[in-house]
Length: 171
Picture 1 (cartoon, helix red, strand yellow):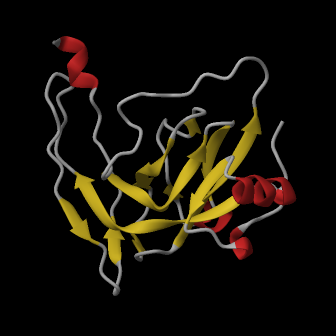
Picture 2 (cartoon, rainbow, N blue to C red; picture 1 turned 180 degrees about the horizontal axis):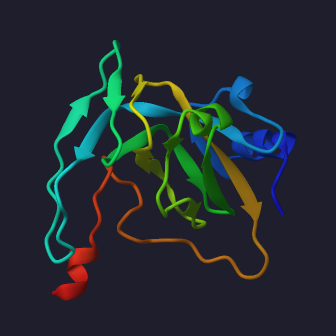
């Protein structure tokens, strides 16, 4: 079951949900609207799933950063978000989707215990500019049924967006 605006606010105030920084005006009917941070890494070259990926992060300038088709971009949310009591899921805002920006390729679900700046896996079908700290997505919180165990994986509490670690499967 997805929790509503008042439940989101109540659980943030009680500490069961973490959203930092928090602003009530960003709470929607069943979601919290979040921003992209101010750094981004472009992956334009062919990838080898047996090799690690080196990322070079750039500041997203106030004048805008041009996203290009056929490129994967990794960025992160401005906000630290998550919960030990709820699962979470992120989506692009409708206006972002209408601009042909996709904010996740596969990782839209967050486990209970995952509290971090989320990695955004950004792609687009058109050339489109983005800006630092612009609203880009929304997060919803799902009530859990059954015994809750927290996520303790390597993607939690990241200092920055991390590339795929698929290459470790071949070690």
